[in-house]
View 1 (cartoon, rainbow, N blue to C red):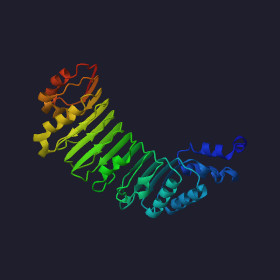
View 2: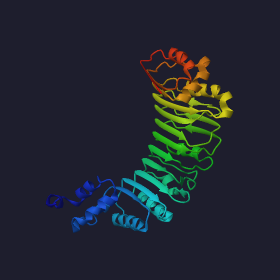
View 3: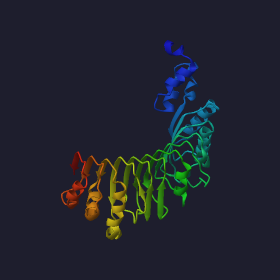
View 4: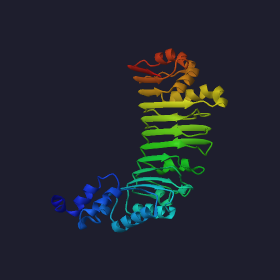
Amino acid sequence: MDLFNKLPDPVVSHILSFLPTTKEAASTSVLAKRWRNLFAFVPNLNLDGDSKTFMDFVDRVLALQGDIPIKEFSLNAKTGVDPDRVDRWICNVLRRGVTHLDLFVEFDEEFSLPYEISVSKTLVELKTGYGVDLYAWDDDMFLPNLKNLILVSVEFGRGQFQTLLPACPVLEGLMLLNMKWRDRNEILSSPSLKKLKISVAEGCIGTFSFDTPNLDFLDYDDFVAEDYPLVNMPNIVEAGINLELTPFRVRGARDNLVKLIHGIRNVKILYLTPVTFEILSLCCETMPVFENLTTLSIKSVMIQGWQAMPVLLRSCPRLESLYIGV
């Protein structure tokens, strides 16, 4: 302890920042009077709770910090936390230039992310989801420095998805997990995007277009769309495709899937799930040539899709590794 007490306050605060949560950092205040408030000056806050005591604790920490800059703010708030206070906490760290925001709330009703997030000039990464919507975000949303966006079970308003991506001009990583598409037709367009992961919780979309010329990684888990009018992925390197059919789309599945598969024909590493492999058997006559494909991994069962295998292998002239699993 004597060694620690000789350290300057900024160094002690930096050491405390490596503890997993702000609550654990606060527990060090019992070590010495000098440490009583040092925990509040760590550059990263990680907060998780659901009680009045928790709310008072967060208020105290933010009050102690005043206007000092903050780098990361992680909040997991559950039922019992006042949504108005959550709004104030978020706006507080936004005013102080937060770069990484991790927000998950589990309230009885949907929680609208504050409008102030949508026009932040400092955010580099935003993770949010579960019981969250973007209804408070307006058409003037603009996140000029946002590079990574992770949305889990987030509700969009009508037309909001089309506004969101143009508002993020340097976006490189996008994860849309457990999506419920509200609009019939969607266009995912981003010239800067490099990594994309999509998984859908329920429902089927009409048409879906990918206009992502610099995308190099795709993980796509969805139902086959009614149409893929545009699949622009000339620089794709790695792709995992997990598609399912709905009964009323079996007839048009072949033509729809052909457009998607042709759009990723430059891929080097490809992963296919059993149902995707079975659907691919519908495309034997129009299978594209995968000129760059070196690694192919297929999960299948003995009765699904094997008629596509000979055609697929002949369409991969540079294939080096083939993995087959069940």
